[in-house]
Image (cartoon, rainbow, N blue to C red):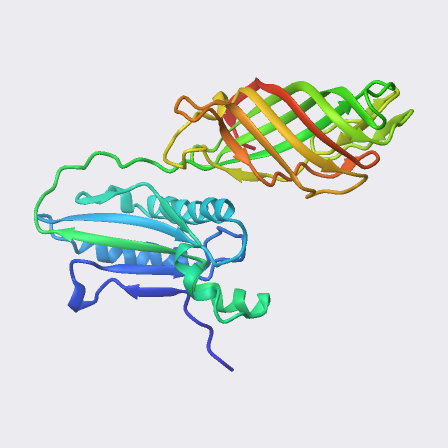
Length: 336
């Protein structure tokens, strides 16, 4: 039987690079950030022992960086890499490594699929084979720099902030008399949840606005079955109507990148969207701009998610575009 591969690359005691010890914890599950048992024992044993050996006259600086294999979107993989790095960071904290006197820790960082991009693309392979061979990239790199002097703590580097957004529910109503055949002006009421992955905080928002809708007129839409946090909804107004169930989380950062921070309870302000939907379908082409307008030119919203998966819908096929705004309902609060 082939021996099981050790999911740790241990370079902590290499004599030819004594001032730059490092290790790699790899083999995370696809789309997962849960540490393996071997990862945890390595942190509490080998990594702990190596850091204890740092002389009291020296200072060790620790960088923890998460990486991913080359599948999924860039934003998704940046957020996934951060979750993996944060999991290792918290394990180091739980193992008591943060209490060592001459060790300084930087905030967890992420490279997403950057290291894998050039190697996994070529040659073309089946997805299953690429994922199996890409286990080395589903990893967290722990890099240590040892300086032979007592160094005061450096200024904290800019933190990287990653967010997620999901639709809790969405309702669109239009009057029975269209402005053109099949085209109506209507109203939107939606609820969204935004999650700050680094802080572990969440906030909910209400979107209200108007829309232009190209769809099939309906006399009645009823019985939107509870899904997620959406309760039963009955729509009796005639005209074009549709409802959307609670959807999955979509990853995003500030429009100017993850180094720009905006608190989870401050993503209110002007917003607009475009969506294509039909009965019991999700993942249709759509996007959303939100968060108010950026303070720096050019004039644009603080965040954009494209494509945006709003979840399964109930209603006949229609295309909608809308203008409105988000208002804070609750938050910030600890995510459940």
